[in-house]
Structure formats: C-alpha cells, structure tokens
Length: 357
Length: 267
Image (cartoon, rainbow over all chains, first blue to last red; front, side):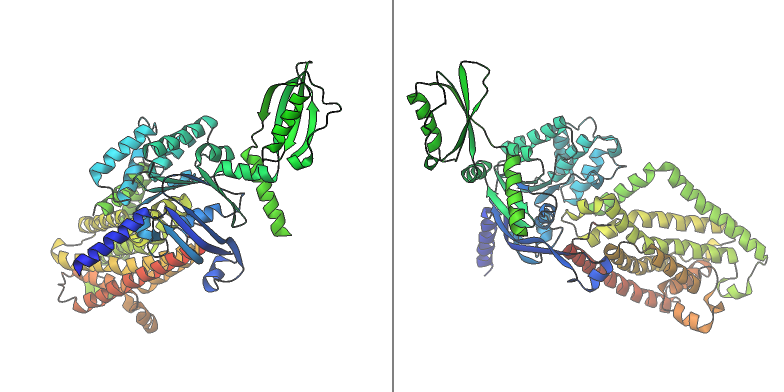
C-alpha cells in the first residue's frame, strides 16, 4: 500500500513539475466599496468587480507581460497569483497547486518583486534585510550567506551591502527588491512595475539583468506587470492585456501587431526616381490598398510615396509593380513598425467604447 | 528556533539603532522607580495595614504591580502595534509572501519586546531590593517565574485577539486605551482589590491580571510556594490555555477575511 502511495505521489509530483507555471480559469474578484466595519458584517454590500471571469495559462520558462491601464485589475491579479488575496470564483493553479488550498507551499516557490521601497526595514543594512528574508524563506544559513553574496554581486550592490537601507538610492532599493524576490531561487517570479520611478539608465540595467537571468535560468518563469510598453516590448515573449477586469488580448507582441495591422493598416514609404505619380492608375482597393500620398523628398529628382495598405502583403507588391512598369526605379522601401503604445491605446479605447455602449 | 532568533535579531538591531530613544526609555523606567519611592515615603508608615497580607511594604507592592503591568502592556498593545506598524511601513506584504504563517510571524515579532520587559521586571525587582525594602529571602523564584510565564501566555492571547481586530478595522487605539485603564483600575495594580466595591471585585476576578498580581506579590513578598498558590496557578493556567487558543483562532479568521477582502496590507 505504501509503495502504491509512493508511486501515486511521485506521479503527482511529476505532473506538477510538468504543469503550467500559472493556470487561471474563469476567475472573478469583487471588491466592496463600503466602509471596512460594514464590509466585515455584510461582505456583499456595494460589490464592484475587479476581475470578470478571466482565463489564461502560462507555460514554464520565459517572460510574460501583463499590461493594462490603471484600474484594469493588474495588481489584483498579481496579488491573487502570489496568494495575498483570495479569489471569489474560479480556480487558480500556480506551479500546479491551488492558491486557495495550498498557499504556504506556493509561497516557498515563488518570488514577488514590488516597486514599493517601503517594504524593507530601513534601519537595517541591505545584507541584514536579505538575511532576514532568507531565514523567512527557510534557506539554510550557509546557503543563504552564499546566495546573498552572489545576488549582491550580480546586482552590483556588494559595496553598499553593509550600509543602512535608508541611505540607498531608488535604483539600489529596486535592485535589492529584485534580490529579495530571487532569494529562494523561485520557479516563478512576479514583478509589479519593476522599473517604476527609476531613471532610464537604472531601468535599462534592471531590464538587462532580467534578460540575463532568463538566459542563465531558462526554466524560471517571469511574470511582469508594467505600464512601460517599451519595457514589455523589450522583455516579453508574450503579453496579456487587461482592461476593466477582462483579458482583451493575449499573445506574442508580433502576433498582436500582425493582428492589429490586419484590422487597421500598415504604412510604407517608397522612395523612387524617374517617376511621376500624376495620372498613374493605382491598384484597386480590392488589392488592400487604402490610399497613396506624395510626400516632399530631400532629393528633387526623387519621389516619396506614403502608402497605406492592409496587412496581407498584396497591395505593396502591386504598388511596387505599378511604379516599375511606369519606368520608375525604386530606391528604398520602408515599412513603419506600429509602436506598441499605439496598438495598446487603440485596443483599450475600442474595448472601453464597446463596453460602455 | 533559527526563525525566532532571526526575528529577535531584527528587532534588536532596529531598536538599538535608535540609541537615544533606547537610553531615554530606560531612564524613564528609573524615574518611575523614583516616583514610587517618594510616593511610598509620603504614606510614611513602614507597614500599610491594607497590605498586611503581602507583608505591608508599599514600595515593594507598587514595584511588583508596575513591573507585571509593564509585561502585560507588551502583550496588550505590542501585537496590535506590530500589525499596524508593518501595515504602515509596508513590510507586512513582504513577510506575507514567505512560507511562514502570519500567526507565527506575529508571535516571533514579540520576542524582543518580551525580552526587554523581562529585563525591566528584573530591574524593578533589583530597585525594590536596593531601595524599597524588598528582601531576597522572601522571594520564591520558581513561583515567580511560573506566574510570569502564565501571565505572559494569558495576555498574549488577548493581545493576538486585539491584533486581529486591528488587522480588520485598522484603528483601535482609543478603545484599547480605555480597556487598558479599566483593567488597571479593577485588577489591583496600584492598590489592593479588596478596597474596591463588591461588584467591581467580582468583575476583577474575570481579568487574568488580578490573579497574576496576587500570585506574583505572594511569590515575591511572602515566599509563597507553587503549592500554596495552587488556586491562582490553576486559574492562570486556564487563562493561559484558553486565551491564546481564542487569540490564534480569531487572528487566523481575521487573516482569512483580510485575504478575501484584499485589505490585509491596507492601513
């Protein structure tokens, strides 16, 4: 019987190690806006949904971004995943375990990096802070000492390690927060706006550090909630965009961009010579061409065409073909990459408008 | 044990980093001893008749009352203060992220305060011996230690229960101050309970501090053995089992509610 139990528990452990890093199924979370005392007595008074039935799954390894405007539910979701808040409906599995029934175990295997610099003991040194949290995470003394030294070294904090935390700059505090989040070598790390209020250089260093960490430990999953869209673009393999408590987009940035361009438009700039657009018969709208404008060119012999097309690729080759058949010579053809900011703005605005209507 | 030690070291390092405050607090305790000394001299009699039961020494009576009350205050106010402080300083969320239960964190966070309280207790006793006429041969250390531990455990329960209230309603200082004064009034910190009207004496029996003070005074001023203090020890043991259990259950319930409402780290 014992042997069978062992096999069963080994199978469970194995299936857990193969399970997604995060598996969220139809999760709802309501907050009440009534006073605290009243909400203790009548918890259902004035309920306001923060998350409305969201579902997604994140496989192990890589970096996933969580984007959304303020109040979209990013922090609530992050707190649910890191077991600080309970869900009201739905199921959340983190590393194969239920956040409601197994929070203590989960906490031993995840890390949380917040941008709240108050979350350290200001009168203690950086090293003392990390040592305390290492003991909380149950790291053996010797291992903790080595791990802390290694983290301080890679984060560039060795020199400041024995100075009180209150003397740290914002960048150093954020680095220490990352160090704390990675103390227990977690399988899954949550970041809540890790570069908020950092100068561009410090923010770049931290992003670079995360990327290096991913290369070094490819099985660790990083889940980053951020409002810095260029950060998401630089770091994330995949982004989940939340708006008003719902997932409105989920996919790789290139897929989201392609989808957006398919729905919206792509802008190409064609520089050509020996060609005049006057009287040219351009391809029809069926080809995917939206419009063409002539832009002023630096070279008086050249013509710059501003071409808006849909994203199926047919219109651009038809336009180029027209230019060539009219005796023109194509010097350069550039396609604008739609910034993630624009895609984000467009998606969120359209979703908000739809929900309001 | 290593975890408890980590909390102790953390709190010691923080407290000792505020050197002036630390020294001023100790000086304050010494000044209190001076006040009690002159208060007992004002009464001017060597043996106060109403204190005959404890040997009649007013200075020793007052010192033990103040010393034990100090320790009770650590329990009553300390836990709630820890919760409130960690909410406002933002460290609660960071500790909540560890695989250690919040109740354990709360109890370990009190160790430094209890250590200081025990040091102050000894300091008051030494002052009693030095200038208050307290005699070492009337002290029963085993009885004194037993009463001390049972008192700490009993009030730890009330303190944890109060911390649960603070976790949910955030502010509770005013109500706590009122309750503390009420407890001091009826449990005989500065005067014997038998001077109170009958209905108040009945009420005072419901408060663990009354039995604790009676037991501690008899143990230190009258060399009472554990056998002689049987009923008091039994009563305190009951409180020491019941109150911490209630405290931990209440606190766990509050944590659950806080997690559900998402209000644990709000302040």
